[in-house]
Amino acid sequence: MALFSKKFDIDSNDPMAYGQASSNFKKTLKQLGIPSPIIKRTAIAMYEAEINTIIHGGGGSGSVVIEDDHILIIFEDQGPGIPDIELAMQEGYSTASSEIREMGFGAGLGLPNIKKNSNGLDIESEPGKGTKVTIRIDL
Amino acid sequence: MSNIHSVILDKDKCMGCTNCISHCPTEAIRVRHGKASIIDERCIDCGECIRVCPHHAKRAQSDTLDMLKNFDFTVAVPAPTLYGQFKDHFSIDQILTALKELGFDDVFEAAEAADIVTSELKKKLKNKKEKVPWISSSCPAVVRLIQIRFPALLDQIVRIESPMEIAARIIKNDIYPEKKNIGVFFISPCPAKITAVKKPIGSKASSVDGVIAINEIFLPLHAAAGNLEKVEELGRASYWGVSWARSEGESHSTEWPETVAVDGIENVLKFFEELENGKIKHVDFIEAMACPGGCVGGALTVENPYISKARIIRKAGKLIEEDRGGRLKPDSHAVLGMDTDIQPKQGLKLDVDFKKALEKMAKIEEIANELPGLDCGSCGAPTCRALAEDIVVGTAKKNDCIFVLRDEINHLTENLAELGSWMPPLFSEREEKE
Figure 1 (cartoon, helix red, strand yellow):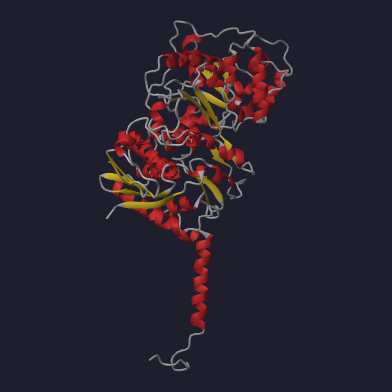
Figure 2 (tube, chains in turn brown, yellow; figure 1 turned 45 degrees about the vertical axis):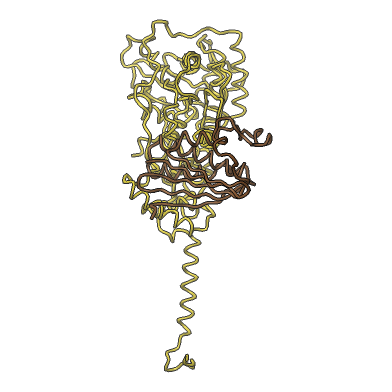
């Protein structure tokens, strides 16, 4: 049984709310007294994943779980899925539309950045069905 | 404990309304027993509550001119914001001469020290190796905000002291090293600077001896400035140094292409959120000011911030032509850097024990879900979430929420009505259930 867990919806229709889940969880981690460097990595990884869920997945749901020695962050969407995960992991590779890029997102750095800032990244994806991203941050 | 903060409450004037609690950037105020009270560990002395209080019940503890008599020799260090309080026909020299008229033996502009910080910043930016973006250290409310809410950004704060502190060091070490019992007084637009002297952040002790609020000194100073026999040529700061009084002054003074200026504490909060998420890119230097418009918006000023800002632009503009140059000697002993680490503050931490903190957090989530989510403030906490936190740490009760209380009363009356019409089986006409 997890020591702490929380679920939330990720709404892709409200640009003002982009990053809301990450910001809220960041505040939680600060209140828990988690060391800053870990909070920083968690914030960056979670934010990137949240944005991916919005711009690629069309929104979905997320959850965070805190255990004794690690944090799990999970995002799920029913979007188009990732046909080639290895390719998607490459820095600079992006399928984002020019509109999304205009907004400052979709530079192809999201997944590599998540990997860089986390201790474990697991992507389950099926084209046409959706994507589930699980991020582990060790405490 | 009130001596660690400069923002104080005048209990007689406080009506117990909720204006201040909802504007506090660190959720440091609660209304209890009809009066606002400040949670010491969280207050950053930004002065936001002073600004929004309709009853003027919040003010800052400022020193007064009376304190000058405690010293044999006194030097005023006016913030450039002071110049913006005076109409255009009052020159900077005139304002500085008027300060001497009020009893100071000499003046040294904070703007002149700002010029020194600028040249240090330029050097740093030219050989930037360390992690960017750097965050300016000049606004003490912003530095304290980072300590409490953004500890992960602490190592990005520029390790150069504020112009106020550098001015005081130059006065004591370079200009008047032989003077004993010398008093340096900063003329301040904000309470955050007052606290920065009483409780320095980046250095063990401040070289400033007193801080006088602009609104404390303005009337006598204005009178003196209008009645001068002779105006001395005292101004030494450049266009850039004086421009530090307004937003973008500091960042533009670096003449570095990739800088950004953020002003207003709410905007600073949002900007730092994004910075922490790694969303802000291609910026090397961040000027962040707690007050709208920069220091001209300080809570202890007298003039409208935007009028003041416009005047600063005009007064600084005159200095482009006549720059008299600063007084820092090349062999200066003045130390520009900070001498201690800036530590994170634990004002938001729920418990020192991680497991206990987690339990409390789970409780907070549970209670927050049961509260109405209106953030009405009637309980004395700024948001429903903050009330949930207060309940869990034991400083509030669930019934403090008037909606929860109403529900409780409803239940109670329903139960009472039901109980009131209840008949003992002896008298009732109830049919036995099969």
